[in-house]
Image (cartoon, rainbow, N blue to C red; front, side, top):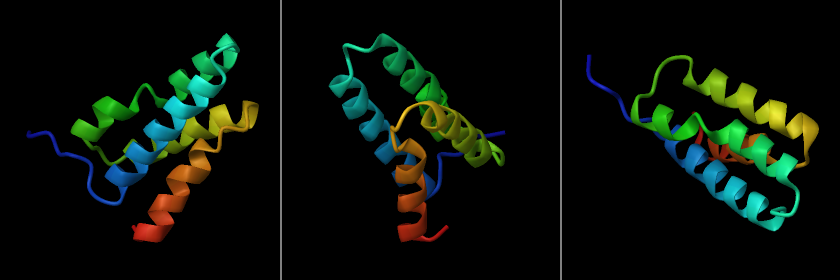
Length: 88
């Protein structure tokens, strides 16, 4: 079975989340717990983008929601915003 690259708008949404996570972590570099939680929330995104599966969206949402429930990162909101703008 061939790997399937994430389709639009999921690809754009994931890339936006990665960018936001990098910037958020850079801005909070002095708080290692935040950095660890943000990286934990996004660590599955790169491999999933290259091998998109049916449950990928659900897994991404779960990881982002867990982080957002602890810190005001806005990662899930950024993901949802792109999906809503580009219409799934």
